[in-house]
Image (cartoon, rainbow, N blue to C red):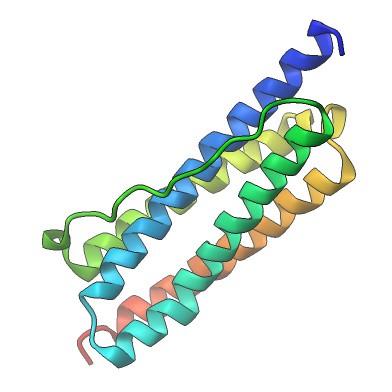
Length: 152
């Protein structure tokens, strides 16, 4: 493959990886928040926020590496960072997770808006990015109602 074809694909993967890293940060903050909750609230956080973000994180990693393999570029290992400081409390950790989700989603939206996925990607990658965004939207949709029930 020529350098002209490799560089844009590499740039696409790097931009996608930035979004994946933000999703990983959100997952870590949600995990830290879970540790601070009672069993019932923890189960709600897990079902409504953690699982959709975890699904987005896993799907995005698979899509990144599948695309890299299809175009002959190296795959990457993603490591979720440690969770945020417990001193921030559940509300602070969930807010930080939401910020990271927004940043990750903004990165994915930028990729979609740039037409990079259409020009360089393939149908599988475009579909995966849309699926990741649906998972993130699900978590965001449940965040407000979840936060409003804390302490009740």
